[in-house]
Structure formats: C-alpha cells, structure tokens
Amino acid sequence: MVQIFRPGADTIARIVLFAIPTVPVLAVGFAYSLWHSPYATAQDVTREQPVPFSHEHHVGGLGIDCRYCHTSVEKAAFAGLPPTQTCMSCHSQIWTNAPMLAPVRASLAEDRPIEWQRVHNLPGYVYFNHSVHVAKGVGCTTCHGPVQTMKLIRQAAPLTMGWCLDCHRNPAPSLRPHEAVFDVDWQPPENQAEVGARLAKERHIASPQRLSECSICHR
Amino acid sequence: MMRLVAIPLLLSLGACDDPSMHRQNRYETYGKARLFPDDAEARTPPAGTVSQSALARETALADPPPVDAALLERGRQRYEAICTPCHGYTGHGDGMIVQRGFPPPPSFHEDRLRAAPATYFVDVITKGYGVMYAYAARVEPRDRWAIAAYIRALQLSQGAHVADVPGLAEKLP
Image (cartoon, rainbow over all chains, first blue to last red; front, side):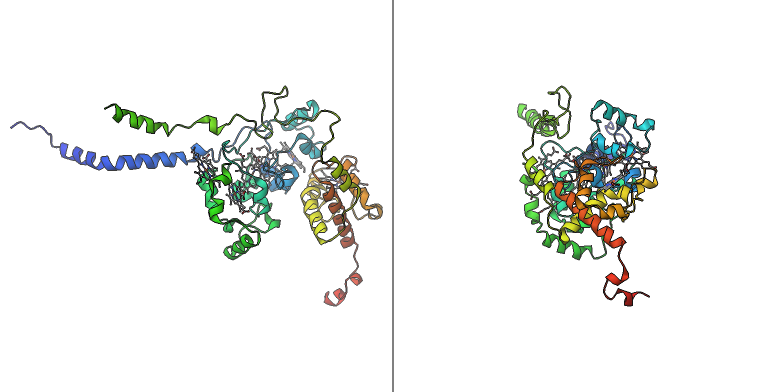
C-alpha cells in the first residue's frame, strides 16, 4: 500500500488538535489585552505643547499648589486650565526674555488663548466631575500619578471603565483627609484600612451598588 | 449557507467603534469651536454685560463675614494655595518664587501693614498692587475676607509675647 501520510504528519495532527481549542482563547485574550493596553488607552502618552510647561519644575521644584492654576477643580466638573494671565502673574517679572516663553508673551500681547493639547480625554458619553471627587477626599495623584515628576504631563491611569469601577466599588483605600487632597507626596498611613472606612462613613459615600450604576457615569 | 456567512458578519459589527459616540457633536469645555470667528468655545460676554451674580458678589465684598474658626481655616487654605509662592508661609515676603528672582514683597509684619485696615488687604487682592497682579479672578469675595483675617492671625502670631499665652513661660525650658 502507498503511504499517504509522511512520518511528520502525526506531529502536525497533534499541533492542529491542540490549536483548535487554544487559538481562539489566545486570540480573545490577546485582543482583550490589546484593548486595555497603554497603546489603546493612550496611557503614558505625552503631547507636544505650544509651551513645554513642566509640572516637575513648577510643582515639584517650586511647590506651587494645583489650585493656583487649576482654579475650578473644587467647584466644577472641569478642573480648569490656567489663562495666560496666570502664567504672567510670575513671568511678567522672571524669565521675561526666555525664548521658551515667547508663545505666552505673544498670547498676552495678541489677546489670544494658548492652545493646550488635551492629554486626558474621556469619550463623549462618559460624565466625569472633579468637584465631587475632591470634596469627598480623592487626591489628585491617586488619578493623575506623580505629576511633580512629570516634565510633560502624561495620562498615568488607563481611564477605562474598569479602572473607574475598581475604585467606585471600594473607594475607602483612596480616601484622604481634606488637607491632603492636593498634597503630591501623600502616602497612605499604615492604618489606611481603618481611616478610609471611617472617612467613607463620615462623608456619606454611597454604596458600591449605587456608585456602579450605569447612570452615574453615562447620563 | 447564507446564514452561516451572515451571522458572523453581523456579530463582527459589534466590534466596530462608532466614533460619533466617542466624539459627539458638541463642543468641549474650552475646546475649539468652528462656529465662532475666534475658534473658541468659551465666549466673551459683550461689553457692558452684568452677570447675575454681580450683586451678590458686590454685597459679599462690601460687608465682611463674621470672623470665626471656620473663616480663619478657609483663609489659611486659600492663603497657602495662592499667596505663599511669593509672600511665604509666615508672610515675611520670602516665598519660593521670590527666592528665584521675583521682586520681594514687603513683610506683612512691618508697622505700616500691621496698622492697615482689613479692607486694605481685600483691596490689594481685588485690584493688585505694583508688580503684583490682581487676584480677583482666582479668589472669591468671601475668600478675600478670609485671607485678610488669616493675615491678621499671622501678624498676631509673629508679634506675640510669651506673656500673652497663659502658662507658656513655665513650659519653656
């Protein structure tokens, strides 16, 4: 009888048999990890800005408070980006001839806002509000990472729905005393579990069920 | 056979990302807006516009709130966020920005400023003074009073005598 299968055929058959159940699983896994990868969520990407404004310099080095520039963060959904006037309240006197700051001076002279490129940008169907998070004691660095070390700001968190929900289901570990919300060096104390639970109770944080209702973020 | 092809095709539609939901047809806060000649979503009110809250703000600016612990605490927060870069935590005019070359402001503890009424500090915040810009856009009227009260507290703290605090002399080594 003529041989139809060559000696290697057995191996190929085994590989095929093995692949039939595994490849779809791997493919789904791969697609899922790609979907949540920094590549897809724009995590850690920096953007070219009209002026290379450095949080490392202004926040880390000079210790300026977030609210000096992001004035509406306690009152509104939008944190607020500083108008040219805010930069000029210092740069009218220091570094007045720095070429790096030429766009700021031009903006003041021509009364035309500086066009900052957005780094964080949630999809249009998601509702986010800074004021509630600040009022309930979630600190800036919990969501934005160590901005005091960033030469150019980057998105430290994935900003996926899963990320929001991870905290909404259990916010206690991230709750700080009010005076520490803007503190970039805050570290949770050793008894954060107790403190967080107490703060959550004092501040009447809603239940995990309530905070993961779709209409909280999709309204 | 048709169904065998159609069903997976339909299912695969679910994977499509519809950009019209992601970037909806509305302007984002401070975003670009092609509708307007200056390309900006944030509109400048026409000259002469009086805002609805103008009266409330004027009133808040005209009569000082009662000074209590809450107001002082509010004042401390605002002072430390907005004024410390230049005036320093204790008001000696030695903040971080001054150390980097900003013209030094006067100390709040000199006699002239100790004698100045609270309204003077509120006025300086509202209108600015010399090379110091106005902070009216960043500090609400009530907060200006709170800061003025806190500056008063700073002035007291820097000019205090041991004898002013009962029992302190005994505790000091």
